[in-house]
Image (cartoon, rainbow, N blue to C red; front, side, top):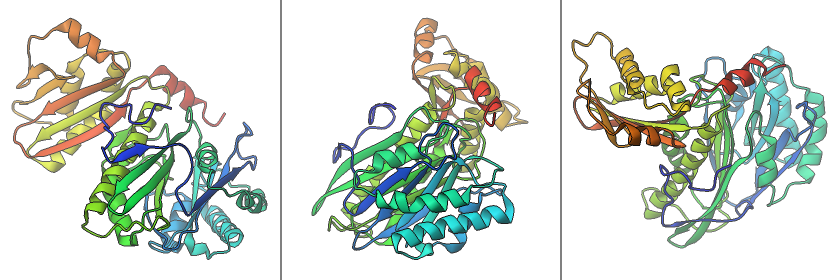
Length: 412
């Protein structure tokens, strides 16, 4: 995928350094092949935290049709006490009823037994086609072999094993300078389609060897997810399976206390990391060639978010983005759809910093410069509504012929 911090929208914090591969202290991962994917690619992975002061946090989909693994995690995982993850790709274990639920329980239990821990300490995740039952016997048989291969260098294998329609792996390893020493933060993610704010068909596993309480993990994950995975859209479709897990091992001995400078700096680092991965997901949107960023400013929080989501989800805006077409009329149309029955729509629109619409009417601009800007790989749209004090940012991919092809042939 793209180089770390390549996007103009995600700068690297000064106290962050990009490092090579390898998990933080206290973590190991491994992957194997069960045969779920017809391609024969790796499709089962396990991540474990052996740190002395482990803590964790989880965020999952809000879909009313949540997959069996999501239900199991909600009902059976220890809050803040997850020290392992078992994940398969190629089969979502969603829409599978009681049998699917019991298969997720069996998957969790088998991983816990192989890791010599309790099932409540293991999160279970699945991603892939909806409606098919897992071959749980094959998964149970393969888990001990995967556990036997656990390694501190297993992050790349984990990143590979969770892919579905992704073009390639999405991972990033960084070091963060804090008071008291340096900590490592790594993450592996997947996602390319069925992506919508309020999560996506994504999985992301984040590891750090910083020492912090479960409450701090939860605070940092919640805040950073809101600025990353909850601010992306590929196709406006809410997934049944998305899950993000943050685990800290405490193995570095560098403490992150609540409301401390270390908490702020680690939060900034995780924020930049997750925003980088979120943009990789958008840029990997099935068939995507361009990424858009829409920022809506105005005087009402819920209103600016509603407008931003409407613009980012508009097929007309997305196809214009795909073609590099600076057709701001499609943006105006989407804003009008989000704000119906206005006696007069007062809105300003900028594309890549160039004003194209003022108070709802066209303004003169350099059309050649505008066309060149709209043909870039990253295109920014700024929408100003009446009032001030509120703003919402969303990242979205274009809509292409290839997206239709990929999704019309997904199960065949």
